[in-house]
Length: 207
Image (cartoon, rainbow, N blue to C red):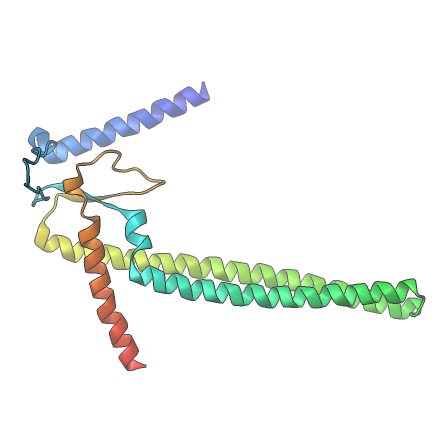
């Protein structure tokens, strides 16, 4: 019953979304004329257009640069954690070897064991802290990218006057089926990258 209710709720949302689209564009706006041979139809003012968000982000130069920087930082942290881990493992084996050979007094063995256990706990804490920092930086990175996209789209639509700009991706299908003429992903990507090149060149000169 719960599964059936869930499916019905999804259908209700889809029906509501379709109704909204029909309300925005009217019956005539729902059908783009089929192109005749050699004719290319493009979106015009008042249309509801869409962008393929996954493709846009993956090919956006800002995202590429920022994700490369973050990946480099992540790799550096992993290398440091692994180096400390190997050293700790080596010291633990040496301690175990000393115990087996009876080379330590009980008091010395207890102190060394406590020291090793503390190092192990500290390493785990550092690993968790660094992981949290990387996740936070990743969120900030995506916020920067999405803010740049949103800002550009707002400026872009001031001259194009589309009724709405929707997004579709591998996980969020706001547009399940769309006329290719209404897909403005390529045009938006070219504009975004052109804008980013300008800001990146300015930053390089300032350095």
